[in-house]
Length: 123
Image (cartoon, rainbow, N blue to C red; front, side, top):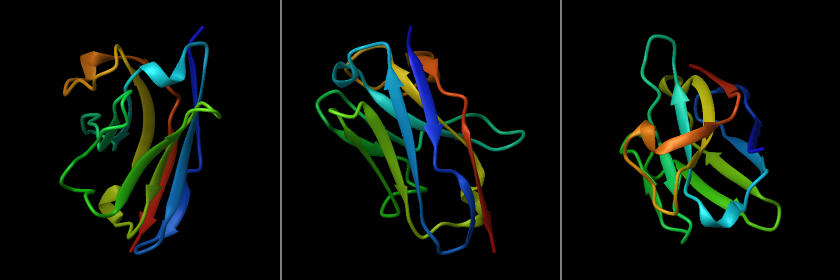
């Protein structure tokens, strides 16, 4: 069965860095889109970074130049390097597997989700 397990969250000061990891199992990692979706209390879960099976990346405007999504196919692991953190980045971060090679702009395009890892950024 498909499993996604995130780690790497924590508390950080504004301007600091964190790296999130998502270990995947139960499917062929390289042939699906993957993405990172933060969700703050009372807000929608929206993608901030996605990577297609071909390695093409997309970022939300709010994180461009600060966050980098990457993957290690051999380790079946997705990463999110978060630099220059801001308090508004605080959220639970979920990794998700897309339903095919391309990344949907809708959350409906992602069937499998991890349990989330909390990121808290203080000013």
